[in-house]
Image (cartoon, rainbow, N blue to C red; front, top):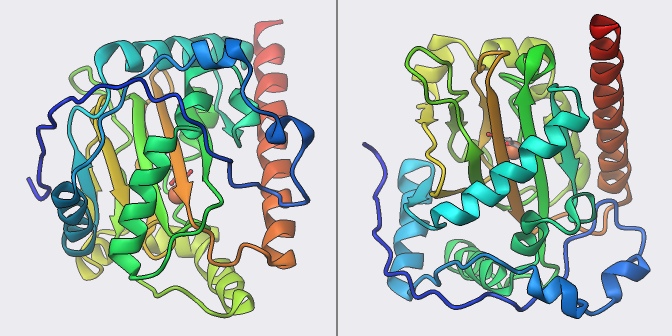
Length: 306
Ligand SMILES: O=C(O)CCC(=O)C(=O)O
Ligand SMILES: [Fe+2]
């Protein structure tokens, strides 16, 4: 096993402070974002997560640098993961058992995942990782979150979509990972720290276009490239949390079976091109693209069942 495994003392305190979410696209904050949480929302903050000691933050950053990712074992308790899984199953039903992703905190509003994305403790962990890893002061823009659920034929199409994230630090929270013998799990392939943090946003976008297309993706998944670029294969276990340098590390998941469900929560921190018009426009396109995928999947599934 490459990664260090930490047994965390569970200093469980209800994590009921909230932080702003990173906006995507950033065209000003919506009214709902600027409102304080209602008493009801406070009550719904139902999970408990441990804080990480300075030594644990150091270890996480060391693992991210040296091994490509860091795993913090048993970060969530079973009840938390079970509640997140129930939410995924309900939502999957609305999407006829096909692939969907929810982008941003508003999309998961009212769920435990929204609480997690708004958790001050998680945001603080991100800030400390960022500061330790980059030597820079962390931004105060909060975390940006995505829920990604692979299932059905459309889920299969989402494999090997290698990309760089728009944010410096990424945390991956496995919610449901196929675990039956012989089942494909959809492990995450990471090519650690292939690039630096670009100071020029245009260069960043050009680089993404060059790498994030079907031909480059086919090359990136080859055994040759895996060996050449020292790929790390991340086999995820629900309850654990995984951190990696998402902006700098090319990554994408292996396939999982159409009959399985693979659900992950992605939490991102620190966008180096935060105020760029170009990036905002591209993020808007991504949202539209994801919406179209969802609509197509549902139309296809309605056609098959009629
Ligand atoms: O679901 C995964 O394992 C990774 C997805 C990812 O990298 C992303 O959405 O940015
Ligand atoms: Fe990613």
